[in-house]
Image 1 (cartoon, chains in turn blue, red):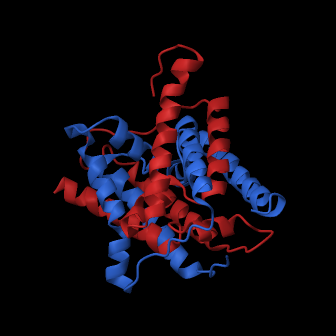
Image 2: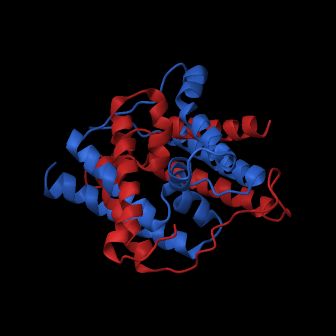
Image 3: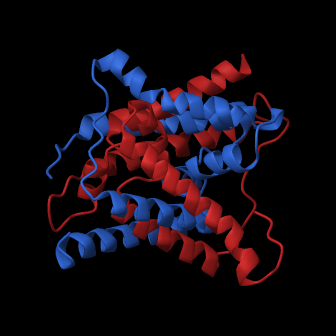
Length: 143
Length: 144
């Protein structure tokens, strides 16, 4: 399935992601990592110290509606794989980001931006493994 | 007021994800498919996000405290160990299969696409399994 090359929209989106990461550090002194945020909200339960995580998550989920208000269209979400593969991938991502201590936002954006060696190693590792996995799935297994 | 500003921070992130294409697994997987239907857009997402964050952190982290807290909460772990590398390798495999990463999938929930809810449910199962697994492997208590 082909997708359009969108350098300007993707750069604007990337800068906004960075602005949000800087805002969260300026306001609450926290790394903007989706893994830690979700884990903190779900596994630490509902209490006052956790309320900011729910506010942040609610804001994140409102992103597509904000895009609709500005551009008149919702973001495209196309899943070009089977349902079992989507579930398998989700479980593996959950295991990996928990043991690896972060994902694309925590390690790839915030961690590398503060020159964390752990984040450079983590990001290098998952980027290489993602390239290899996509190659194997699409060109070796022919999925 | 604090929670309104925190909500808006999340909204900026979610809007960024929505505009950038990170909420679309077809686009994310194409970025990683150099040998096939390659779409290099994600370089601009990650580059734009990281450089913006780097510049912002440079100034923010010189301040004594954040606005709404008494201290910055920066990760203290320093060890580059098997858990970090193995976990990150697994994440890469899962991302390459599904095309969603957590930061892309959470805002995508706002499109009310059933597949996104399915992915996030599977993601939470994986996160929960990773939390309980050490009890069965070593018997040692785990502090996350």
